[in-house]
Length: 156
Image (cartoon, rainbow, N blue to C red; front, side, top):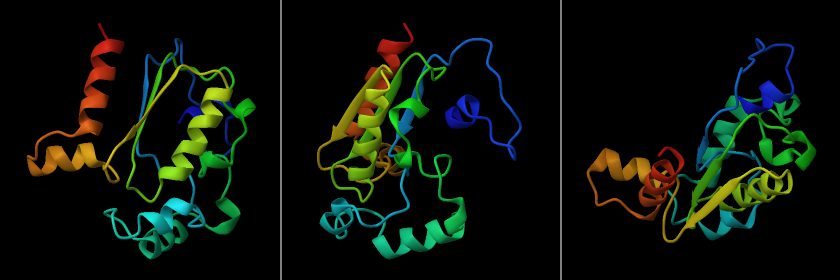
């Protein structure tokens, strides 16, 4: 959404905001369709997803011609995000997820764009671990705690 606000896409209706978003919560975002990141190999037996299944989903989601800044934010440069209409960003991801390295790369890009980014790499957590905690009734882990703390601090 933020990409299309900053850089209107001809096939997406233009969205204009009268004020910036108060916050942007990125929970384990899928920001690259490439399986060439080291975290894919390192976390193949740890994450809830597998590399082959993600490659298949990527091919179903977007054709090769559609791999661009809108579908793969990891491809962007910092100038893509300059003047993003958002006051704060929380980017959380799991240490044991396939997407770990690409999320960390996007985090660097957002930080270089001078956005107010809080980045939390959650030890021993997998993809969307905070959502899995809520779905299963398990004890909340570091990812859940990070999201709650950021929300409390951001919206007082």
